[in-house]
Image (cartoon, rainbow, N blue to C red; front, side):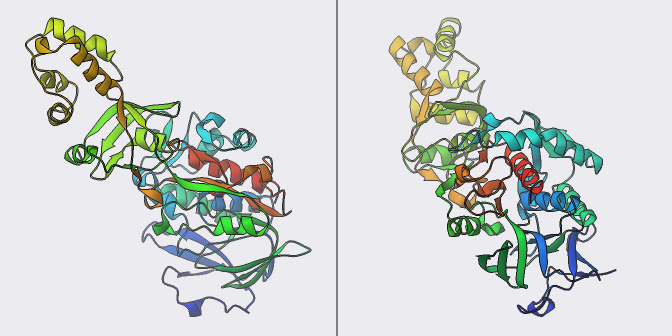
Length: 437
């Protein structure tokens, strides 16, 4: 067996479009150098394969080795130069790879029952067992969110090792120019030449974070074969603010505070983060998936308090204390001073009328914000919408429009809450498809 680095491969190092595929390639992340290593074996040529998967992200890798472990010949291709880029940057570089409390209620879809079957057949505990088998150390950060102790590459290395053991052929820097339906499956024109397969799996993800290679390719394939594409938009994304609140957000940039954030009958209790552009933080990212342009977002800055009662109590017990002083015992002094400056005149508590305290309570417990928009796909963690799941089997992930075509992961109209749920959907949907391809 020989090996060579391919992250700097020249066009000449790949077979010409008319060439047959003569090597089965399996990539593994080199721990010492952080580069992709190509392992070549002199097995038989594979001009035709059982399963061809497009997209070497979380869902694609999972589907590839699971199908290959069943004895299926699997080729996995991706237009990027390295696999799993989104895995590597996720969770602040530590990969929030699943959530212990995963259930169907944690997912958004116009067909909310679709995710139930896959999530039940490959659970968070199944993935955790694989992580443990590979000796990857991890911990619960909060709310069931599981992170690597060390770095995200531990998860990517695990997936690539599973691919290597199962005999998956992984080809990076491979673009698809054309897909055609044939009597026996599908034929693809690629930069590797013509590839034919019985089953074609689309695992190309959504539009989120285009700098990591995200494109609308999977949606185009779906439309080509008769699928309905539901409107897409950025989800789990920061809000931008352009009105008079922008100054407050800018002055408080970097400040984080525990809040209850609500919109369209949905609420999340987590931190918000003030930024130069507007509002971010876990609670904002969560609620952004439920927000529509023009909607009002309500923020309770004191979720642990009955605010009107607390203000009345402070007025009775500390009549000579200024309100900003009292707020400074809950928020940072800077935030308390800026809130007082922007929202009301700070004075000793005894000087406020009942009506004034009611207005202050309304502001603190139900701060109303109308975002100008979001930061868009550039920073969004997921893409809402996508391939309509009513045209896909919830058991097999197979197209109901074109037999032998499968969709897994984010390309489908299934989006999870923040906290490891989207990775669990990638694992579960990929596993479901891999049992039938």
